Length: 295
Image 1 (cartoon, rainbow, N blue to C red):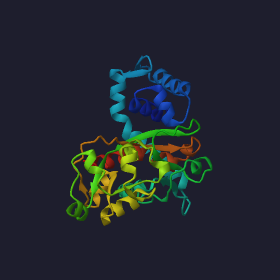
Image 2 (cartoon, rainbow, N blue to C red):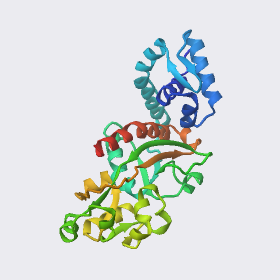
Image 3 (spheres, one colour):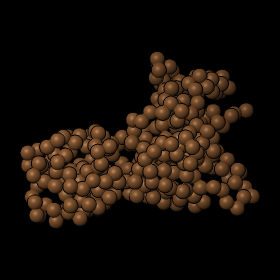
Image 4 (cartoon, rainbow, N blue to C red):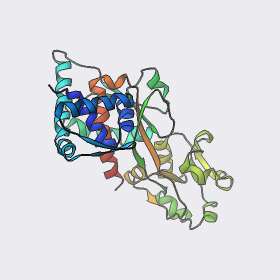
């Protein structure tokens, strides 16, 4: 008899390319993943993976199984959710928290896209930047700037935001466009408060010659974008937000790093089928939507 949950473990391994990465995504230990895969191989009488150090490679049989597994696993999860909520009028919404830019310009589009296939999907979205809400159980899934490691939480990098230097058409008509870093020192700038100026994509603005030109500060990216749109000054913004607002990209030669975004969840929360379903849908659909927004 097959254990359908084993197929979820197998899918996580082939998606992440290794047992350790799959374990981090699933919120379990690496030996647990190894035992589940070994049990599948014994039950099926076929080797699924060839192990090469910490990486794995699909066998021919494993490749055949992988091609068939995704729709089956999704169907199993959907059935599990339906059975769990059978006879209930409502079930609690999945609680999401995200940085203000993602909460305003990305997450609503992802949820709308998912609701076309899952009409009963309900979420509660709270903008914010702290991880304490995950530890306290105030949120189920958080979207945060990647890099703040917490060994008690499951973290998965979901995408990288492209950034650029942007201005309004009105501002450029009045002050012109900088052609060098020296030119940039003559312009008004929009940025974060001091506590957030250490982020990699703000390094240029954090330098002393440029920091003196910051005339508008806010820790909210949407507020910064509105200030740039109003003509207060030029600002470093995520491309997908600036493009949506009709801002003008400044032909700046300096390098502006991307911002890596992670999805974070407590292992216990992932045991909830509604949370688990959204976790995997965000990894796939959410990442694909951001790719299209940044194209």
